[in-house]
Amino acid sequence: MAIVAETSKFSKFAWPILAWGVALIFFFPIFWMVLTSFKTDADAVKPEFLLLFTPTLENYANMTDNYDYWRFATNSVITSVSATLLTLIVGVPCAYAMAFDPSRGTKDILMWMLSTKMLPAAAVLYPMIFLAKGLGIYDTHFLVIMVLCLINLPIVIWMLFTYFKDIPKDIIEAGKMDGLNTWGEVREILIPLAWGGIASTALLAFIFCWNEAYWTVRLTTIDAATLSKLIEGNRAPEGLFFGRLSAVSTAAVGPIVVLGWFCQKQLVQGLTFGAVK
Amino acid sequence: MGRIALNKVKKVFGEVEVIPPLDLTIDDGEFVVFVGPSGCGKSTLLRMIAGLEDLTAGAIEIDDADVTEVPPSKRGLAMVFQSYALYPHMSVRKNIAFPMRMAGIDEATQNAKIDAAAKSLNLTDYLDRKPGQLSGGQRQRVAIGRAIVREPAAFLFDEPLSNLDAALRVGMRLEIMELHKKLETTMIYVTHDQVEAMTMADKIVVLQAGVIEQVGSPLELYHTPRNKFVAGFIGSPKMNLIDGAEAMKHDAATIGIRPEHIAVSKTEGTWKGRVGVAEHLGSDTFIHVHDTGLADMMTVRINGDIDARHGDTIYLTPQADQIHRFDAQELRIA
Image 1: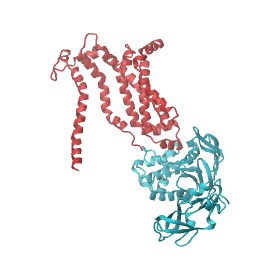
Image 2 (image 1 turned 90 degrees about the vertical axis):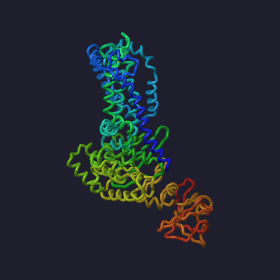
Image 3 (image 1 turned 45 degrees about the vertical axis):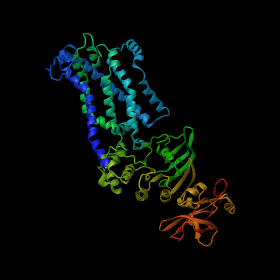
Image 4 (image 1 turned 90 degrees about the horizontal axis):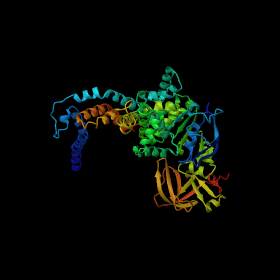
C-alpha cells in the first residue's frame, strides 16, 4: 500500500512538472519571436539574452505601411477558409461512404491516399508550375485553394473516417428505417454525432492551410500570395532583419494561435471522441 | 395489414451463399421467430426483409406489393436492434418522435402518440433524458416506443434482448408478448435462444446455414421435429440422440428421446449408466448420465429431487411412444 501511495504522490507532482516543462520548451520560440518583434533590429541581433529593452512598434508599422500586410492576410484567410470548406465538402461524403458502405477496395484506397503524402512535393513542382501557367491559373486564389484542398484531403478523409467509424452502424440503419435518405443520415445523425470530430478536423485542416508554405510561396507572386510569401519575402534581400521578420511572423501565426486557443475545448473533444456508444 | 412473403429469396456475400433460394410466408398478425445457431443467416434474412440488405435474387412482398427495390423507410416496417440503436444526441422524446417527424406528422399528433407510448412502456418520467442516462431495459423500451409510434405493418426484432441481463430479459419478453397481443401486428423476431423462440412464437422458423429446416408452431417442432437438427435444437435440455445398435433396434439410423421422457430407477431399467453431475433446480432435476454405451452423455429430467450421488449406478427407461426416429438422411421417420 505504501508503494502505491508513494507512486501516486510522485505522479501527482512529477507529471504536472514534466508537462509544464515540455510546454515551456515548446512555447519558448514563440515567446522569443513575439519579444523580438518589439525590438529594434539593432536590439534584435544582440547576442546576450535580452529581456529588458525599450519596446517599439516600428516593425509592425513598417510591416503594414511598406509590405501591405493586410493584402497577404486577406489572401491567407480567403484561401485557407475556402480550401478547408472545400476539403470538408469532398471529405465528409467520402469518409461517410468508406465508413458505412465500404467495398473491398476501401482499405487500399485509404492507404493509397495516405501514400500520396509520402511523395516529395519537389518531385511534382515543375509539372505543377507548367500546368498552372499553361492553364492560366498561376498566382490565382483558385489554384491555391485547389492545391491546399488536394494536399489536405488524404489526412482529412482519414481523420473523418476514423471518427465516423466510431458511430455504430446500427444507428445509421435505424435512421434508414425511420425514413432518412442519405443526405438525411448525414444531416440528422452523422454531423450531430461526429460534430467534435468534424470540427477538430476542420480546425486542423485550416491550420495546415494557413501554415502551408512550400506551394503557396512557389505558385504565387502577388495576387494570391499568402502570409507565408510575406515571411519568405522578408527573409533575404537586405540581410536578415530579425525584428521585422519576427513582426511579420508574429502577425502571421497570431491568428492561428488565437484560433487554437479558443478552440482548445473543441480540439480535445474531437480527439477524445468515441463516447457515443 | 402485414402479410410478408419471401419468394426464392437468395443472398450471396462474395463467394459465399449465405441464403440459398428460400420461400416463406408470414401471415398478418403472426408472431414469427427466426431461430438458429450463430451464423445461420437469420439476421441477414431479417435485414433483407427490412431492406437493409440487398437481395441477390428473388422477391419480397408486403401485403401483395413487391417491395424488393423499395428503400427501408418506405416498406412500412419498424425495426428494434440488439444494440437499441437510439440516437444518442436526442432526448427520449425526440428519439420516439423521430420517425414521425420524418413522416411529416404534425406536432400535436406526435405528442399524443409519444405520451401514449411512454405511458404504456413506463417511460413517462424519462422523456427528457438522453439515452446515455437510461438503463439497458429502459433503452430497449425507448427503441420499442420508437417502433410503435410508426404504426408499422410489421415489427422486426433483431435479438433485442441479448444485451439485457437474465431477469430483465424475462420481463421484456413478457412485455413484447403483451404488446403483440394488444397491437395484433405482425412481428418477426430473431433470436438464437430457443427458449425465447418456444415461449414467444406463434410460428417458429428454424434455420441452419441459410436453409429453413422446419416451420411450425412451437409444439409441432417439439413433438414432431422434421429432422435431427431441429430435434437437437428445440427443447431444453437438449434431446438425447442415440446412433448405432440401439437405434437399429427401432429400425432407424438415429433415435432421439427427450430428457423429460426418460424414467429413472436405481434398481432396474432399459439402459444402465453412471450418474455424473446433477443440476437441482428445485422443481426439476437434470441428471447427466455417463457410461451408458449409447451416447457420450445422456440427460434426464425428473420432477422434484432424487437421491442420486455422483458415480452411483442408475437405470433409465425411455417412454416407448416418445422415441423419435431418424433415417440415414437425418429425416424423421413417421
